[in-house]
Length: 220
Image (cartoon, rainbow, N blue to C red; front, side, top):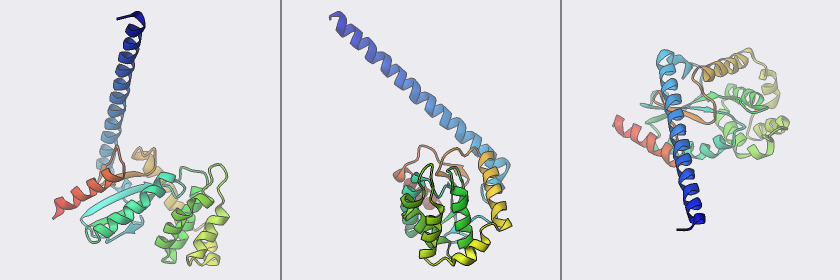
């Protein structure tokens, strides 16, 4: 074996060791974050679900999926159809509890749109529209919130009434409480999901479907 082959073999081995170490470190960090979130929920379960939190699906469903989401988040938009599929698949067994996580610029205003819509019983159509047309208004660094309002108006939101509700004290209180709760629970990215009080990690579409399916099966 020549010297070049020895060097290449040594480099490959070093990279493999480094990659394995990085993977192990990520796994350890995720396990620690999961344990911390689980402990935080056990210590203060109200931080996970508040009485005012929007609920999609039957309120008394046996399985609860809590989503910390940001209306401006591209990953939240990508997961939204999966959530809708799960609701259709488990119409009586699953409820979705939504928590606001306004990490992006302008997301607090999007939350105000959603809360104004909730007062008019337009929450779901407005949520769907904001996600569908998210690329038109949630522009990173320059969100177009006027367009977001118009999108909401196009699906039936009374904009005049909604604008008068925009700075409603209850909405401000909800925003403040949700931010405090996500900090207490260690939520650092969106979407973050808790299934029946347990945080879900290493998540993708299939993993979420499988986790919810298993939880539903355990209740039957």
